Length: 454
Image (cartoon, rainbow, N blue to C red; front, side):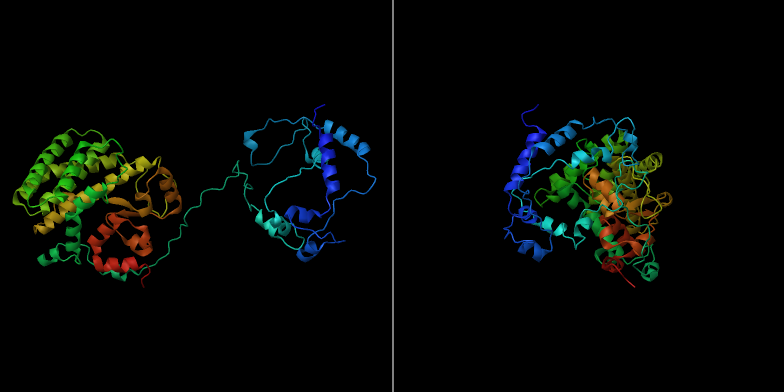
């Protein structure tokens, strides 16, 4: 027999109980007991059961201890085998293994555990009071594990409600003409006009790109450590142009011309989807500088290379059509199933946004030159996902959590009706704001940012 047998432990427990003079409630709560009978003052005040644990005099350990020892020796062997398919479902009792609660009752009722802990367990007094249901409510798990379809009883991730609440009137939205081909040339210098706001946003793309490596259509985590040379060249252009001074202006323009050649040379050899995307992104950054700086030479070079730029744009559009494997924007506020990976969605969404931005850039240049935009750039179907939570997610876990719990709004062919009616100001990212402002103007966006407008 072991030196510390259950019989010995039982004797020690009963000996400790025989020395206990305070009631059980005061012992558990680590409080002083005045030992009044039939109830001490503390138990009477708190409505607790007052039980004194001292054994009656003359009680012997020997007879019942022998019975206890025998019962402990009769503990059945536990069959630790289990069926993973029955976890969380209806338990199947085996007749070969007698492990039912009835067969184990005598074991559980004959052993006690004395926890000598310095923690204050006075809250247990309130949970065990007869006139309160706090204890049962505190530990209640509701319907957790009840569903038989979920084997492990794991609650599903909460989803956004599919009902869309209308928070804005369509009167302002429908009163604005989306086309801005007819504009006053002076509006270009007014940032509160649609064309002025758009020109200002395009002209200053290089600033944010040089400082943060990100733009509304360029995600900083898209390429990781495999940064394409075309985009690195565009970053060099943006950084040098941001630091230009009257003294170093000549060198900066020389660097821009050299980097433009590198972008064209590397872009011609692009073979992967990421490389084809990067060359168009690089051209948007490069031409936003060359077209709007005011230098005649840089603008002439940009116009001369526009045909190559548009060829890459249409190649990227064809790539978007090829990569459509179920991750295109859905037709509802919340997608039924998430994409295969965050990286796959990020690449697809970056392609969609870059296409919209590149075509918008070419269209704006044509309008500023008082020309009709090329018909071919108006033909493609444009689409992207308007969601600040998805686009600004910095990890896979944050992305999939936002996918399940945050709203997302599909935008097709620059139709912002759904966003105007249902989106909160905090739901949209900078790219959505830029496109929405270009179509509706800063005044309408001021109403949008208020939230609820009637």
